[in-house]
Length: 249
Image (tube, rainbow, N blue to C red; front, side, top):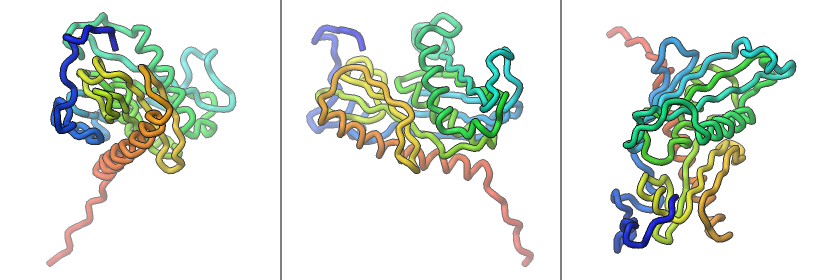
């Protein structure tokens, strides 16, 4: 969210309170999830969320490299979040920049609190998230994809982890921001939770909200996460649907 002049800020809400892409304030962008898309990973998932396209792969539990990072009582969760150089309009330098390293860290910490890491001591669980096309909300899309990939890998976890960003645009709170809203809005709050317990495993904030706005944003985020959660479960159901034999006539 850079500082821009008033003349540079696009109209984010119309007279009817609709957003620039026609959505309501609590309406998500189209979300599509496919599980098990990579054959050589232990688990994988592909997510299209609005204009975001994200691939996630999970490897492990497996031997820890380097060995000195090994934990005797639990698995080490290692996450690599990377935005491809062609994922944005202006080509970015290949490799992990400071932002990608920070996001990798918070995602690995989020999943470490959900996975049953004590069942796999002295091993590592590798989560690889590749952003193929970006249009705001990529860390949330990455978490959503990684969660499905972990489940696809059969790694025990307390629940799937849906995520969503809640922001403030044109003075109004809105879920699932797109690029223009993220760039010119007043606030952005990515969050991820465990639906069965309601426990937040990730909460970040950029910009400014009042205390009442923050409380309302959390409520909106929980509702948005529940919608994402249903799509995650549906992707896994389709992946592992049991085909019943056709009865003989």
